[in-house]
Length: 211
Image (cartoon, rainbow, N blue to C red; front, side, top):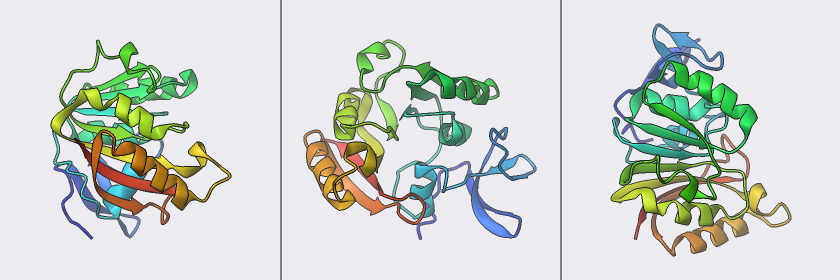
């Protein structure tokens, strides 16, 4: 397992178990140890990618565009160790929780927008972001990544959690994953893939960089 965790992310003991943790205000009742809070990989695809030792290229302090922020579970951890973190979420209900998570995080910027329509937030998100994290429950996940590639720096990274069931519930996840990777190759070079099965059924973690 890789120990190349971003600065600001540590392995700490909670209730006798070593877990990933970041420093920040807890947002959904996770265990805490002083100012540190546990990062649950079962509730976070990015947490699972880190837990599984994938080379995310996250080092701490980078500018992040996060697509599919939901209620802020994962993106609040990201904002704890990253730089400016733009959190895009389409559904109004989870955005209310996301706003609450952002209250104590001056680097977290919630956006009630549709990740499939990057033109609607292009005036807000700075260009040349270091990392694009994508966790959206929609068909056309590769297309979303390609449409948002415009924000990524040339040496940036895409960290994508592919949800097979959001693409097609009738097909084998492995076939869906192959199709998504093929579509992604239009604009990205895939550096690493790994199934997240240990934490999330029918999900694939992908690390890629812009072509």
